[in-house]
Length: 575
Image (cartoon, rainbow, N blue to C red):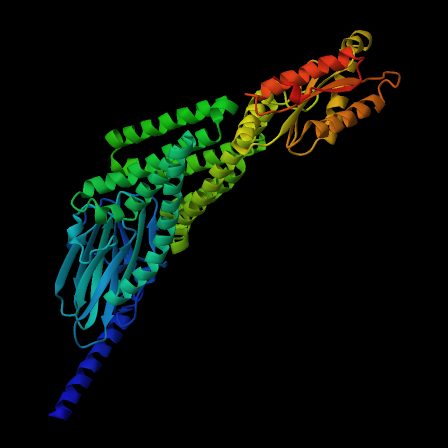
């Protein structure tokens, strides 16, 4: 009995080998049977292809075609430009086992409309499968965003006929795998998905929080831009069909094309707002606005007049054009001196390269591969990071400009000292500090002796030169935490925290001597001098202004006493 069993097994093995050899010798010489004992990824090299321009042929008609009607695909992935044709594929599958072998047939990309499979076993039995994005998600064997079917292959050689129709970009990548091998591959895929979606999600929520804090509109447009990318990417990768629209295949298909239009519109809004085209480049701002309305018009017109096929076709063509336009606008802004455009330009460049590579891949102008197909995703991740840096950089530049503007508003143009406006803010700040910490402070008031005569005799230009030199003398002699102000005309004030009247007198005397000894290069004969008044803060003072008034009284006394001298108001004499 044991020998009999061995003989039966050997007989079956010999029959299988004979069938395989006959298929190679007398069957289609262009077909090589796919060995199910190993994983088979992207089996395009083993496919024969036939185009049905009418998209109406049925299996019986296709089976009657001669081998001359087919042509070897000769590439791992089938791809064609946008087409209304149906494509039929024929291939052989070899099961070397003596029992049924279960395998998953998995299709990429996720957007294929209609996938019909007929498997003809070595015994001539037919089994058909039907699926795709126009059918409910429940028709899939495995709960997965990619279209998939499970079939138990009979021993020997089976012939498979595959029909694919889609209104989207025509790409067909078919893999035949064990379920465990497929799931293992998906673990690796999830790492990539987590990297892309996780990175973009972090950028999205981070900048959303910044928008609520800063209230800058371009942050809102950036969040909308990233959100639209999520919608677009999740729809054409099949995630929205898997999680949200399982029972609504029509809505899923329209979401794929609509997501592309939303992505373009939000990208243009963000670019226009971030680069501040309305303020700096009115013409580009107008062009961008018209382009947004044009995209909306094309989206509506193609949807209601042309149908889904033209809706998705135009969206992919437009997304390349819009990417190039945004890159051009960013480059122009940067060359025109817009500092905030530098990181925006780099981000736009990575997004542009990724979008163009993916678009050219799905339209079959460049060979399909995982990296070219996913180039838009990787480019978008880099784009999101660089644009987030660009936003932070723009905020930094804006703050720098605000600080410069505030400083200029509080700075005297001629001397570079603080002006009267700054005096009111700083003196109040110092007064509050005095109240909290019970510290000391002194004020020096001085003006240039006979300054009106300088203007009258030598002109206002010379007067400005004198003011500038006096301002430089003061800046060079005071400490870092002292404050010097030009209060108007030839009147100056120095605010000295942590300084008593004696120390203030010594400083005033140094300033007086420096002014008196300074020789103007513009006019060596012109001798200038200044008169000084000093007062120290006391606990009875209710503001710095009261100290300033006393210093002004001391200045008046210095002038009355003959000018070019320093006078101090005795703080103990204050009632």
